Structure formats: structure tokens, C-alpha cells
Image (cartoon, rainbow, N blue to C red; front, side, top):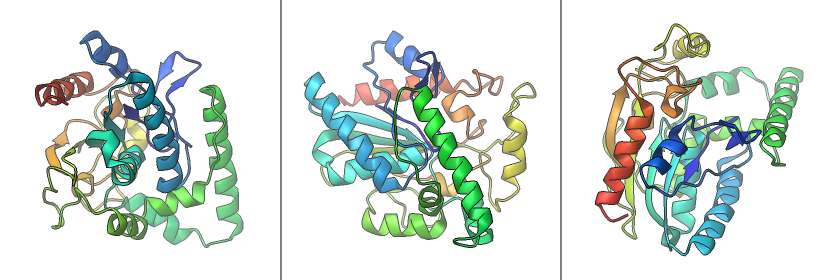
Amino acid sequence: MLAHGMAGFDSLFGVYDYFYGIGSDLRAGGATVYVTSVPQFNTTEQRGEALLAQVKDIVARSGKGKVNLIGHSHGGLDVRYVAAVRPDLVASVTTVGSPHKGADLADYLRGNLRGGSFTESVLAYFANNLGTVLGLLSGKTNPQDAIGALAALSRSGTAAFNQRFPSGIPSSSCGQGAATGTQGQRYYSWSGTDPFTNLFDVSDYPMKLSSFFYSEANDGLVGRCSSHFGTVLRDNYDMNHLDEVNQVLGLTAFFTNPKTVYRNHANRLKGLGL
């Protein structure tokens, strides 16, 4: 099961996928793939509950008993939430470019937007409406809470979340976390550290700009160490935050193919009998 990040979606108009070309590539290799959809802007708990409802439905319909969850960005926190509250439904949790210890950009925005101010209200209005539109374009109606989403991805927000759900989080600032959960779920993560990878990808330019808010190597939105969860498969792919889901339109680094990374991981899970 693939879980999108903030401002994400499953598929726009049923033709443009958030995990661009990844689901179809995995299916071509024999995997059963479900792409989920949760509120674009909301707290981890609200997004996690929406994801949990879909996990329950898919488990019931498929008869498989358990699912392998892969979450990108904020979706990585969502899948951790599901695994924590219903570990019996989860075989593995994989997070991709997820801010487990917060995102510096979220801290900057939260620190410079006074609560209840006109500026905060305006930005929240536009973000919430963007989320509503993205939801409608993917055939969904989701509740939006941009301020809650921003707080959830701040250092203090993720620290509170990690205190409630510590499984898989490294005890050191940049180490590995536990490889398995309390009921044997496997934990994995990977991320990139190259904000600018393709001259022809227009999204690379804002990724490069946002990278300057970070004091450590990062993918443009998430720091390398913050992305660590469970067994860290790799934390320095030649990818930025959008490359991690093969966006935009598959324009990524010339010698790093995100679809190959997902395919290799699917084979890893298959080899473990998951």
C-alpha cells in the first residue's frame, strides 16, 4: 500500500499518479498494489485514521491478513500511526523521505506565523482550499487543516508524536532505529540528499531554494538524519523530495531511477515472505 504525503493524492482524474509510474511498474513485476488517499493537509492522527480505514477495507477485501505500508513524506508518519494502533494488520512499514524528527522549513514557517494572525489565516485559507481542490480532482472530499499539518511536521510536533509512538525511531540523532516492531513488523526507510537533480524539472528550482533552510544534507524538504527510521536502507540517494516518488513526470537524476528502488524493495519484502 502506497501512502502519499502533504498536498498529495492517489491519482488526479484517474490518470496522473502521485507515485508516478511506480504502482504500474510494481504491478508489472507481479505485486498487488493499492494506492491510498488521505486529507492533503491535516494532522498525522487525522490522516492516519483515514489511512487505517482503507487498510481495514483492503485487508477485508483481499483476505491477505496484513499489508506492507510504504509512505512518502508526511505519509511516512501516517503509516507509522497505523502500524502503532493496529500492528496486527501490518507486515512492514517503509518510510520514504519522511520528517520523523521534524522539518526545518516547517519550524521556520511556524516560528514566523503568529497564531491567529491575518497572515496565518490567509495562508491557511489558500492551503486548505488547495487541499480541497486536489481531493476533488482525485474524486475525494477530505477535511483540511493546514495549520494542524504544519504543527505536526515541526520538531515539537514530531517529538510529541514520537513520544506516543517511539517504535522504529533512532535513539541517537542520526542512527538506525529498531529493525522490527513489537509484533514483528519490519521497519525500513530511505531518502535522498540532492535537491537539484534535473535542469528540465521545474520543481527542482523551488526544491533547491527550500534546501537552504536546512543545516544538514537534505532532499529539499526533509533532512537526512530526520528521515531515519528502522533499518536505514540508504539516506543519500541522488534524489530530491519529489524525485522520491518519481516526480515531476519522471524527470529525475539521470543515473538514479526511483522505480528501480521501489522494485528492489518489493523484491526484498517478497524474499522475506512479507
